[in-house]
Length: 263
Picture 1: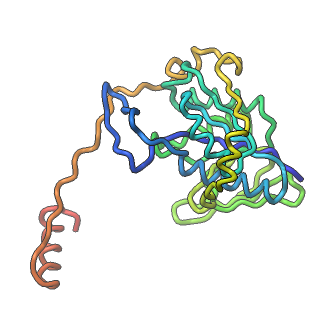
Picture 2: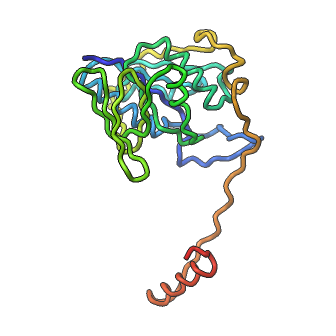
Picture 3: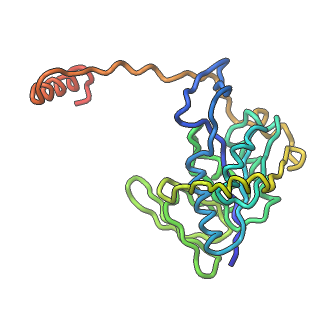
């Protein structure tokens, strides 16, 4: 049976970018933005399921106006259409405020499954999908590394990797699943896919289109406030230990014991 699958995505700074701060905020000018890697795992699984069973994949991303370039990557690798949730009122929100925006959008999109990354590599708080599931009263399984749909199309079997162990869980559909590394790497876009992405539709929804009170989203609807951002302390320079292997090993052990206090 065909499935309508939504892939919740996020635009994040490339992990190889140099992050600088100004006025207690990350300087975005000149940053290279990409799809969050964990979200890519979920998108790949959504594409695989549609290839196997039929249906469509809708990519949903909440971000500023210039995030469309990032959305196009999802379309280039095979997503059928996309929804861009963009409004100045959405900016500055925390996980709770962002979840309200996504939940409102999902109420207007037909879906059988929702895939998301288990966390985003920028803020790294791993809360948004769980909050969306709560707002929509949906089952939720996080950190999925293996996924199988039942023959009747009504349930799914998930394997989660937790603290070196594996949990096996079964849930009814519709449900929200978050992807962990190991579920599958996102495919590369083909030239045909890149060209075709320019013609695929991207629907734009703002707060008014979603029927949202601007006081409940973005910075106005955030449950917490960031007081101060600081870069991590600079790493001390490395130390080269001279001598043959035996002498160097003895000196290394001494330094780890007496200076670093590691052993």
